[in-house]
Structure formats: C-alpha cells, structure tokens
Image (cartoon, rainbow, N blue to C red; front, side, top):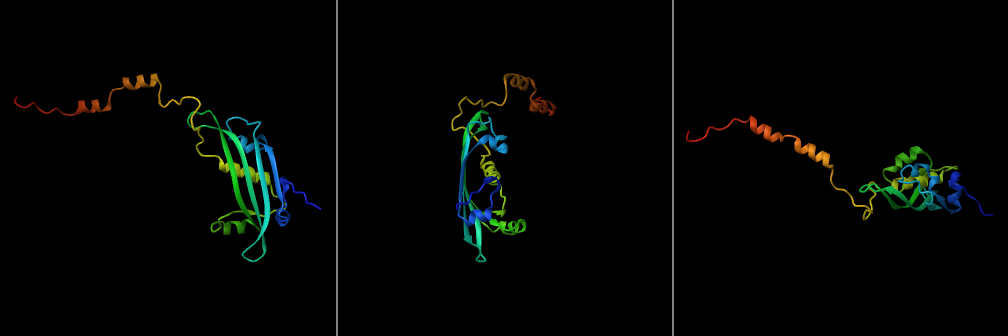
Length: 185
C-alpha cells in the first residue's frame, strides 16, 4: 500500500523513511507573501516544485531525515531602473536536514553547511516553498534592456532654473575676502 502525503501537513519522519517524493504546480496567487512582492498579481504564473525525502546516517549512526527541495517559477518584479514589471525566474535547489528541536538547530547551525529544520509530523511544506522563493528574489531586479528609455537626469527643467537662480556660495565668500592693495600705487 502506497502512503499518501499532504504538503500542508507533511509527516516528515514517515516521508523521509519512505524515501517519498511529492510534486506540484501551484498558482502563484496561492502564495500571499510572494504576491505582496510582485509588480502585478501574476494570476497565470505557476510555482512548480518537487520535494524528496531520504534518510542518511547521522553522526550518532541513527537515521537522520533529509529533504531535497526543487522549486521554479517566473514572477513579475519591479525593474529598479525603469520601474516597470520585469519577468524574473526564481529557482530553489536546496537540501534540508531535520533535527529534534530548536535548541539542537541553534547549536548546530553555525557549523553545518546545510539548512536545519525542526522535525515535525505536520510540517508545512508549502510554507517552506514560499519562504525559499522569497529569499531568492534578487535585491535589484532589472531588465537586460529596459523596454522604455530610462531617464538618467535627476531633475526637471524647473529644478534646473531654480538652481541657476541661486547665487554661487563661493562667489559670496569671494566678496568677503579682503582685497590686496594694487602694486605701484
């Protein structure tokens, strides 16, 4: 009999012991925190994901649960040059090792190369998928070539006119400086 697993309440010990795999294609609007970061709602965008569990021998010789997560999607972010939407691909390819509790995760976090999570019988896999996608959003999403010309000036004509009307502060200082007497007088 094949065991069924639900991504909303994943029994991590059973999932990894069975070396099971879950996959899905979920609409982006189902990930509320991700949608909050987008330039447009992305109603047609899909998050494709696959999670695979396995057990590996731990330092103490006991089986340790591991999860491999592959996620990909394309979402519209705000281009930081032209401020219009730019379709940005997000990819996640990460291994997670599960530990017994938060204290163990904190103690081992500094020296471990992999990400650590606390083992659970009702783990929220979709929440992890969303967390990982949020961390993959680039700091400065930009088009390779922006669809509209980018205005590189920092001011408009009114600003320029106001700047030109101001007296030069160095000219004012020059007027305060004492003049040298002319030679030969």
